[in-house]
Image 1 (cartoon, rainbow, N blue to C red):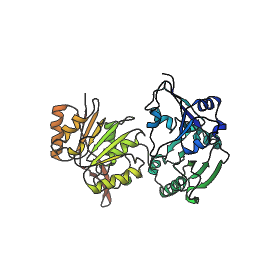
Image 2: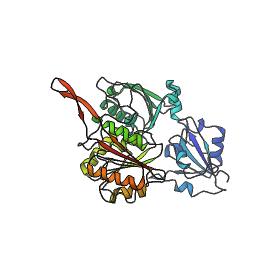
Image 3: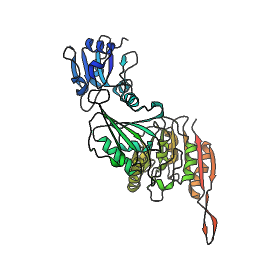
Length: 402
C-alpha cells in the first residue's frame, strides 16, 4: 500500500525549519492534524484543512481517512517516534502505510547545548505520567533528561528531589529549544524559585545527594526500611531469592497474590521499565501501603486489585509469572492461579506455616516443581556477646507451566 499518512516532526522554529520533503508533504496534504501550537506555525498558503486534535486525544479522525488515495499529514514535536504521536500511530498503522519525517528531538538539542552524550543519560517522560515515575531513576551522579508535562513540572521536580535527599542536584531547564525564544535556567534543586516556566521545556538533572540521603540500589532485595508496612512484608533476603526464582523479563506481567505491602510486585517492576505487575490485596490498609510504596519507589503504574483470591483473579490479564505470598491454603487459589498462568510461565509460592507447607508439598506431587527450604539467621546481642537469631524458615515452591 502507498503511504497515505505522513508524520512530520516540527521544531520550535516551525515551518521554516523543515526540510524539503516535509514541506512538500504538507503542501500536498488534503488534511493536516496536530496540536493548536503546531497548526498555528503553518503558513497561510497551505491549502490543507487544519484539524486540531480532539480532546480527549483520539486517533480515530486520522484513521478514518485510511486508504490508498488519501494524503494526510500529522504534525508532531521533534522526533515523532520518541515519546511522540508517531510511536502511538505505529501501533495501529503498518510501516508501509506511514512515512515519518523527523526533526531533531528536544533530547538531541539539549544534549548538543549541554555537551552531554545521549548514550550516558537516563531519559524520563512525565507527559501524561505521574511525577513519581522519576523516583526509580534517582541515583548518585546520574544525569537525567526529563520531558516536562507543563510549565509547573520543573518546580515539582525540584520539590521531589529535595524531599528525596537530592536537593544539591543541579537542574537546568531549557525552554523552547531550537526556537527564537530559547532560554536556559540553572539552579540547585533545593534553591529552585521559579514556580512556573514556559510550558514547552525540558529539565536536565545532574543528581547529587545530601549527607542524609540513602539512594537505593538496582538489585533485588531492597532494605526492609524502604517499605511502609504492618509486618506483612517478605523480608529482604527471602525477597531477593524469591525474585530470582520469578526471573522477571522485559514486558512480562506478574500477579502478586496476597501482596501485603506490595514488595514483590514493586521490585518486579523495578527490574525493567517494561515489566508490569498486578497486586491483589484484600485489606484496605495494606492497599494504602502499596499505593505509598509504589510511588516512593518509582513504579506508579503498579495496578492494585482490591479483593481476595481466588474471586479477585477473575477477568485479570493472564500473567507470565505468579507469586503467592499468602493464601495457599485457601481453597481454589493454587488451582485458579495455575489455570490462568500462561504456557511457559512460572509460579512461585512461599509458605511459613505447617499447613501452608503441606499445601505446597501436595501441589508439587501433582504438578511437579522444586521445593526449597530457606533459613536465615542474624547475629544479635545476648548480654555482652552476640548470638544467632533464627527467622522463621520459609518453604519455597517453584514450578513452570508447560
